[in-house]
Length: 283
Length: 283
DNA sequence: TTATTTTTGGAATATTTATTCCATTTTTAT
DNA sequence: ATAAAAATGGAATAAATATTCCAAAAATAA
Image 1 (spheres, chains in turn orange, red, cyan, blue):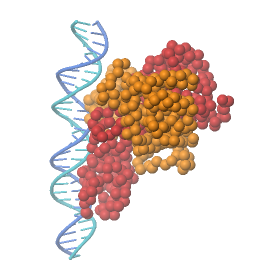
Image 2 (cartoon, helix red, strand yellow):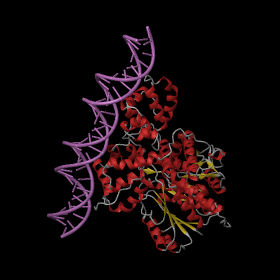
Image 3 (cartoon, protein in one colour):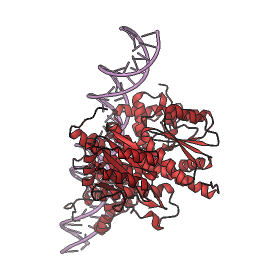
Image 4 (cartoon, helix red, strand yellow):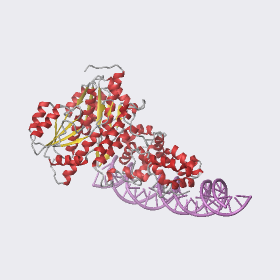
């Protein structure tokens, strides 16, 4: 590999990124994986020893040193100082209380990204603290036992249904996404058997279509798992399973970060239940 | 001076401050000046050797060690790790230097919900700290100026494209989701005009289809905004716009919480730009 | 398929860094 | 003012860490 030390190596992290973008394809395999790791984990590079870093990156210390030299640094220590410099300019996040972003107390210079990521973090904290983990396990048990899982939701719930479908299928679990015209969905819902299951996802303002699908399934004794934002939701029935997740609202807009996390957990627990109970399905 | 090592020393930086407030008056002169320096310069403590720190603080290395021991730490290295933890994305348990969530060493009682929500929080922290906000504003400006926004992505990216499409449409912005068969998407991509725009979403392992759509659009001078996980992604081009978001991996599985937050921010900034620049569209 | 070149891992070595120990200085008590 | 106790500096030592070197593995070219 041709050396590049004819020019000065990047002395700031923000210059290292484009440098690697340009030279990445010319690096050997192992050095490429170091590059990816370094770009994705600059704090790990800045704060650990070469032994720790190389183990996390899946290479050896000598490969780490070789990577540094390939960029033009004198050694690992020279490169590490570049990462450390970039950390000196990051505002320290310690002891910052989460305050409600929508109560008008935020500083005017807070960016949209800051407000939404703080809201998302708060939503995740609420999920972790308030979620009924027994309910998640019971719901995942129901999903695991179903022959086929049907998934329905509209509007803001659509990314959730898509993701749940994608993740379940990735785990080799038979799942069908109910989408398209309302009449068509209702027709399909009428055909769901009792050994199958419906996952319904709906948030305020609730869509009548999803509620109707739930009504149909319950009247046919088809089990239903609901993902919704409140016990008071029209799809949360006392006689079936429901999981609650409420996203923080910023400027009248709610995100989906906590809901995606919950959907992922539901899919993973379902996969675990299947693998632990020997119910394997040929895919 | 009476020792305080009968109780455990502070393991997080935010607890060190009140500890020092309480014990400061009982410290000898030199240790007091180390305390002040440490509180005012936590990044210096975290990122330098004891020789450098003691020189900056105006004491000797043995005094620095003595200060650390007076607080209850085993030595300077023990104390420094506390300062380093406060600089990481998410505090890691003390003395678990080589362990991580995905190498099987985590405590057995941690639930799936806990692991994934912690990973999601870490992903959001990384997004907030590392995201290029100028790039987000520039990308949203491009979206705001486009007559119609086309959105493409497959697999795990599908919930993101669905959500971005939903949010943009909710804001009265003309957006079209490119989905369905690959050949059909490519046909549609060829018809995208230069006053329109493509948003491409792709994560490792990258799909060839999305990359091909980007190639087609760039060759026809159609602006592209890429949402991806790395500068080194095949859809991140130096001559166009790309936004990076990398989700933490747990057991080989990556969530979408940070990505959904970024997609929401992009849509909101786009809506803001439109409303601030008087480009209203009848819906 | 084989030979050559490049890449890589891992251990030895070199270097750097933290800690301990002791003499000196400073502070406090009588 | 003096003696005793506490605090401190600085150098030696111990420990930790980075770098180099060489053999083996992998990749590439013929």
